[in-house]
Image 1 (cartoon, rainbow, N blue to C red):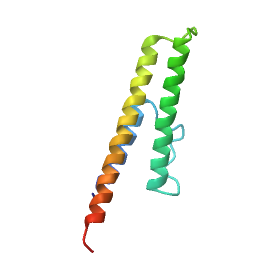
Image 2 (image 1 turned 120 degrees about the vertical axis):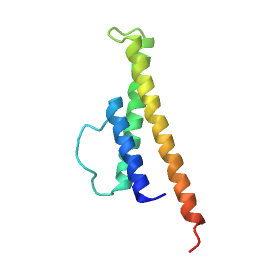
Image 3 (image 1 turned 90 degrees about the vertical axis):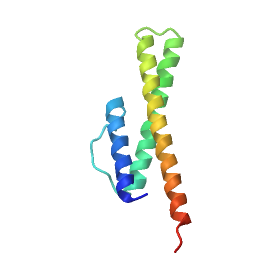
Image 4 (image 1 turned 180 degrees about the vertical axis):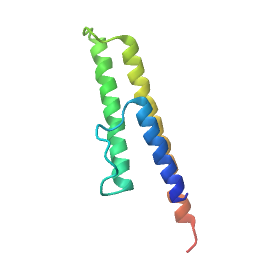
Length: 105
């Protein structure tokens, strides 16, 4: 897997994050740390989306006013899409690692 392929995956993750509404609050470019920092930030966003969705689902179950079922379902689906995207990125990274390890020096 080349650097261009990894950059392409990152662009897809950013686009998915923007469309699902779980983009980071700051629109700053990648900070020091490069790919590792971006990956860590993406995982934090996925975790945050899941925690928010589960908290909203719990609020709905407890009967708190102002929490609609459709909002709960949409947030749960957004969290699921974010998780699936993260899972696919992990799978591709593991595949790339295995490919590099199989190269003969």
